[in-house]
Length: 278
Image (cartoon, rainbow, N blue to C red; front, side):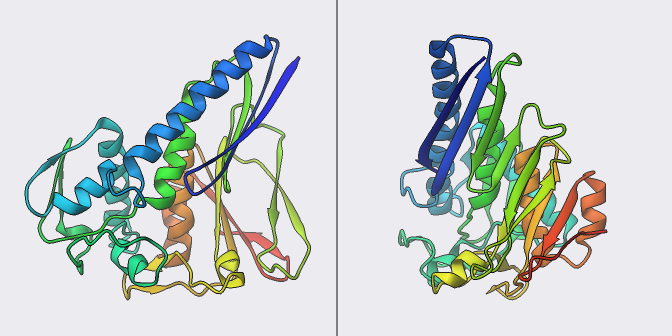
């Protein structure tokens, strides 16, 4: 049984890939390269930070003319808009402008934006904005990148991919993950069983410790969320798990939505106590 552990800075975080299997070192290295290539492609297409990314081209031009999308972008935007509709706007990727104003995203001199998801027209692989918007795919793109990376790993290789809390395992049953209590002065790690093959965790404590405001924006008022707990969501794909962590912070019917996706959420409080959201 050979093992390989690699780590690369991508998606604004560190992406760790762990592989093991009855195969050669060369095969494990080749598989890891293929997985990282998928992540790099998502980063090139969906990064807000890159002024030349597909996402930036959309933010710059989609209010002027319809823009044709790649298959991956269409897939992620379709899922995001579906969640916006299901939550009546309490999940909304049109928060880029607010994050630019708070200094958490770079300004690319896009036209100022005050609209929301209702101003997006998406017809299969063509998008148009009814007014200027600044989309930020952020976590949902990170989750999608993890899913894409896992999709190129052969079944005979056991894999774990962790992109800053967005995690997916190929052989997840009977595995344990560890979540840090959302209080940096409390040196406590919570052990949780994997419930599905993917999970994601969101919290505000790292931004608070660094003197920053939360990156989780409540679309209803445009203000950062203030909850001090962390939310870990288990689902059958990382993209959905990540998006649903934001829903836990912003949507008052989050439990019903979790059930509709057959997902589970665990809340960890600053004192280290935790419970399943039911």
